[in-house]
Image (tube, rainbow, N blue to C red; front, side):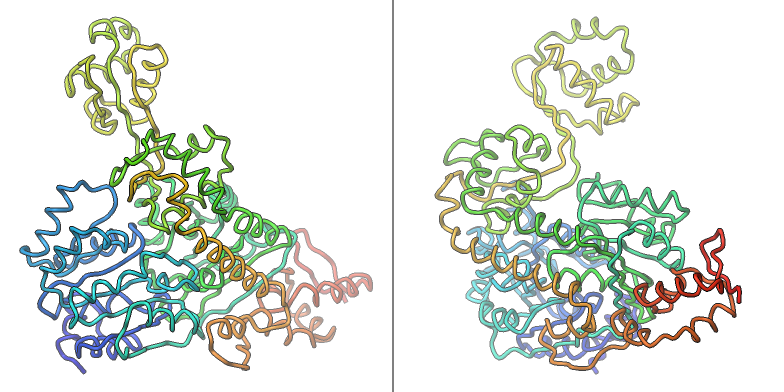
Length: 627
């Protein structure tokens, strides 16, 4: 045992002992070996590279694909007194320059950045001057073209090895098939890597898959019977609100979460769930990455994820404390059709991508050959409405452009107001004399920015709201009203999207260079969705066994715990056994299914006993013995 590593775990992270395989991985890294670590969601992957970096002298370069993950990791390290910084989209050249210099001279221990940032000459040049202790690749499955979140920029991470040939590299991920594992080690040019792989089997999670015609009723009954902390995954912002309202109306405390919410609201919502003020978080897949809540007892799915990998990761939010937990999937045939429509039909072809890329540049007023490293805020809904673009197809197109390093796309609420006065401040004040709230906003703007008619000013709605004792919403409304009356010019956007252009506009040529890769990627996405549909449709195979086989674990052993296994046990249920249960107490259909009995077996038996007059149905929908 490495005493220094254990001491760091206890002192910095507050844990008394390592999780399975963590210590062996850390020791391998400290021995300067390349390491590939495949640990399940909640297995503590970040600790495997953070502790060696804290112990070692120098800086750890961490490559991560998501801005939200980078920000969460940096905030977590800083809260522990560790010097960490990151390079994300939207920062100026001056900020980039200063950050990189601080990493050379400021004794930072961690530098987080995206793989796209790694391609910039200034970044590579400064990294070559740093004393690097370790290279860490997070979400390393993104390296592989066979992975579920392939990002071509990950293929160039090996260039870091040319800058620091003797520095070890650790690649970590939660999900990777055998094909993806081989692709990772080759693409990252790992030297005789030590490979650590935990089994994908989760003994404490019962996988239940229920085909239903009444999803809402089944969901309510499920949460009436399972009171612990939960995440309920859906696929749209609209549904997150709808199902949250449904649960609350049935006295099940729930909140909704999606990527379009303002940062403060997302943060507050997540904190209330983390502290168990809220039982159920109804969320899109924007929720969960980087959140480690050990006491989640259930995870429910109401719509299909896009792959087996996503399903496995999302169900892995449950039972991280090792206690019995449930992963419940409610679906119907419409969900499968919807998934094909949502994921397959919306996959952008090269021609569609060319069209949307051109329209995006036109919308943002980017001239040919310009735009590189510029950040733009805009309303996604307004953009799609302007050019009559299907919202789902437009969203997937922006994700594809992000994946192929044309731009960096992120979502998050931001109000942007850039205005120029057409009339003098006195004239506008006179016009607003009978609108005190709007007048207070105008006076705050004039005091803060002046009233020049010659140039545009960027108004900060949050600042003006504070200084005028109003709200951000009212500031935006007031400015929009002044624009409508032609008293000011400007761009007033209630933005929910941010884009940083990573290269100059070049229209069709931009897409042509990766068109072939895009077609191959689309085929892989379709195959992965089909694998998940097969899991749902084949009701004769153990759920856990199918998942394990998908990830390359050759097992013929059934888990005995999933809905498929328990339904086989239930198939031999006799009228005599059912009678004995009901003679003991009145029970509902939902109570029977919670015990592992399937409706397909129960309902014919109950109908038979009802017809014989041996059962009566009570007003509370429970069956009582009447024999």
